Image (cartoon, rainbow, N blue to C red; front, side, top):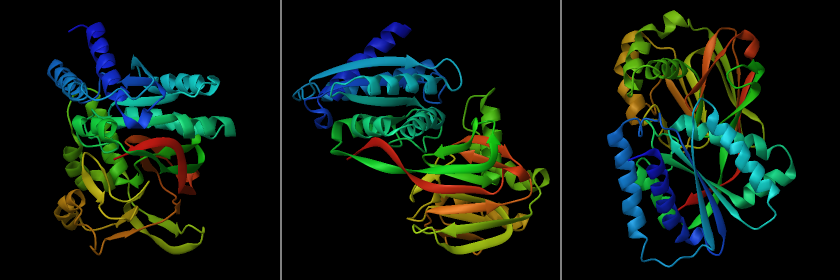
Length: 367
């Protein structure tokens, strides 16, 4: 199948699916399908055929349902380089803001967590520009992340079929939180002192695992997260010797209710509880959105690797979980920061660093 035939098939299927959705009843809907062909779920011909078949099957299931949308216009955009999804998203926001008609704009991320993060980062920063843009995004723009990457921790659903079910079974829109990360000096990797996470942001060993996984994926396709978890348990503290990290936790009233000052393997903040990272590691298995792990002996570290995957680290003496609205970190050593899988290098001048829950003014579908 040629690229043109693939894109036409996607347009036809998405048009059938969206046009029967009660979410867009009596609306003209502009759908933007932003595809990263290098994503884990799309890197081979077999995987491409699998995702096209899934689209076709679900579209066929909708063919006897009544058409509810006034009109559906689908555009397929394929990224050619890093951060290309951000360029596409900026143009979509400009279109939505400049158009005075009462239209809906659905952005579909067809890639992994990196593509999803790029799109949402633009939507977040654009919403902060002015009140008009924020209002347009809040009222007219919806976002769906398909599970087409290697890990899919930030996707809507763990499979492509489950992701698409948000369109066929969606009942309403809602708004979710994001994590705003602010450092004391600019992060070249993000081009600012401020960045946003829509899943989990963390400092420490897990950021190192992400960095090494990303580097390995750049020349070898596949999921190397588990491999680097095991290697990092042995060598991380040689590369990044630990020192006391001062962490303060704040409630919704911005009052500090707990603090720590000790060597930590990592500390993280999620946009909510019940979140995973690293291809399904249940690091936040409950309602708590904060987790930290203290420095522990090597043998304990190795024995505990599976606990961070299945969520049984809750209650261990070397971990602490809580629900927080904000946290601040003071540290005087080099360390890595990861934001939804994207990594930045920090040093003493980067601190203090804060992570804080903020509103994300883009519609998400709930079933």
